[in-house]
Image (cartoon, rainbow, N blue to C red; front, side, top):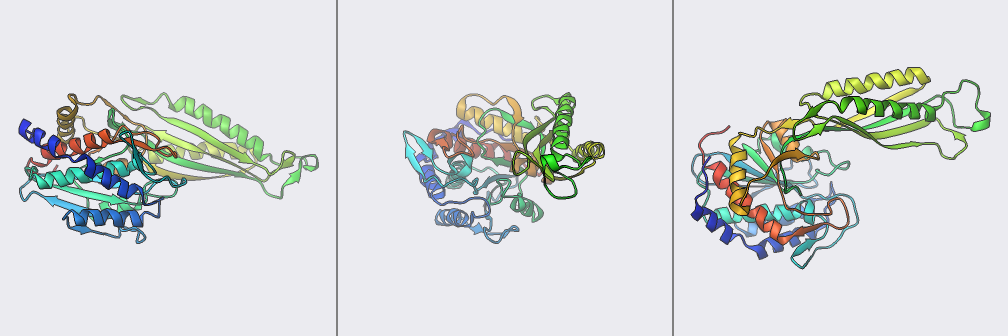
Length: 397
């Protein structure tokens, strides 16, 4: 790792352009881009980068409706490649146009994560314009298909398959504190309990007719009991295994015996590589309840990401901490990543260290997204200085 000199720090801090970040962020936010429909926003980002003098690639990345955006900044000297990666899609909520008021950017995607993308675009500009990258390269990638349940991370996976990936990756999620060094795996489950026959009035039920609502109640109780057992599995920084039931639904009217009952929720785990064991445990429980209630129970188990841990001694972590300290006066405490994001995909799919760090923004997944401009400036500074510290050392990991 190459620690930036004070002269390099002063140069980066002085050259990050606040107004340029605002202009870039507003230009991105003002284009609606719900997941699977981020093509226009990707084209706008490509246009901005082209106008800035960068050579832009547009790989299809398994989603022709919105080809990804890729830019490479090469130092011409040996070193590592640091990737700046962000998603341009937003959740499926009514569009809120951008506005800047009292030093805060508002609008759809302001915090998640078009503001953060604008920040790392500015970091890339300043690294180029000041020729501050001592070695290696910076790879900028932006894409669609992040936000679930509408997206499935196919573009990130396609970029990894194509080798469009760095030796480490920074992602500007709305997580400013702490530095996440571990993340739980997570799956969404959709369970359907069913019986043969048609719906019937409660007073006309034949004797012995399976009761899918009662089976659902029994299953929810068993799932809660399972949660109480698995939460004993703990890991520093990240917490414990969990099973959460968020929805149970059955019937069309209060006095009807229905044929189906559905239950959905999440299963999270702390142990990397535990997907198969987690699924087998759940399958065994469902089979037991189905036999006891004379019902058929089926499950859709959609894995969003596996558990992972970040090596706290990795040069990338040291480079980031030095950069953060140079900007703010202190490094960050280690802690958990509370959600699944594309960093999880890079860590578990490509085996590269990933740090999710972005503005201290608010309102993600709501109609009230807000990102302080000062935070976007800070993120740009931290990203640029991390690149200086990380990329200059010879050799890939």
